[in-house]
Length: 116
Image 1 (spheres, helix red, strand yellow):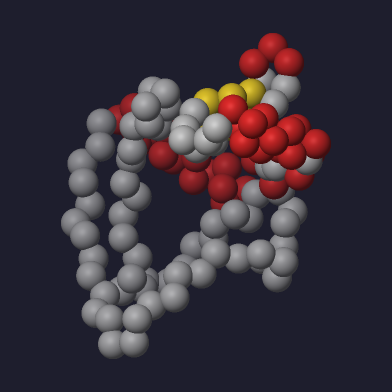
Image 2 (cartoon, one colour; image 1 turned 120 degrees about the horizontal axis):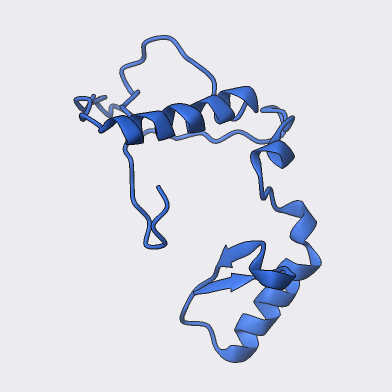
């Protein structure tokens, strides 16, 4: 379910659709009280040190790496990915690594709302 934490339909959030009305209101209440802790833009996220939080993928012992072939993208999608990558690089959310057998190409996914 989609909801907004701010007035005039700003600060969108997605919450579980199977909550009761009271659970939904309690959940939204907690989110509204703590909305300044959510990174709404890249500029807000900028500067979070990887020593504080870092995403890691823990692999099963003996798992074999696989590499998917690069899919062809239309020029508009390619430019959208390039812009998003640039934002993430600038804000140190992602960083380049040397050639790694676990790295796969970017997959573009169209969300229900229509954004990529």
